[in-house]
Length: 171
Image 1 (cartoon, helix red, strand yellow):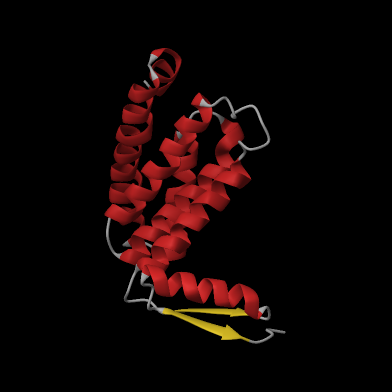
Image 2 (cartoon, rainbow, N blue to C red):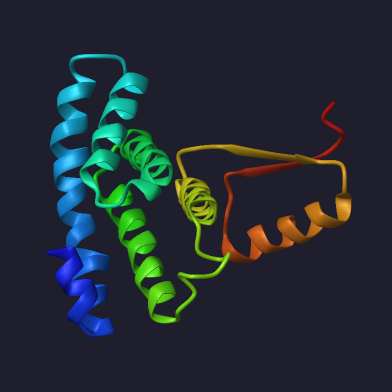
């Protein structure tokens, strides 16, 4: 199904099907059913690992397996951390839409398109989403006060109140 869409559809259909429909369907199966079955039968870390492994093995193309295992784990972690199905679905949609756009821009054959970059993008999205969760408290420690002042000003301007910034060395 995905291969047919990828080969013949225009970019808007690819975004609709590959960027939105497929991630929602995969999350319903792998986070909604598979992960929930595992999490009631074993500890959370093992449940996340096994559901991530099944998610990766279900995909086409073994060259992306390491990225998909990490992505599956992080999506299960986001589901558990936030206690809602919406966050991992939205993160998955964002990653898939970025993937489609990168393919349309023909960067899929460059160094920009590799699974470590995808992991970094997913982690940035996960951390950014975590900071927006007002119930959690975050502490940023750095020895360079100039960087901390920029982050402090930016977080005040966008209204992030759950971030504590400490200027010190962490050794």
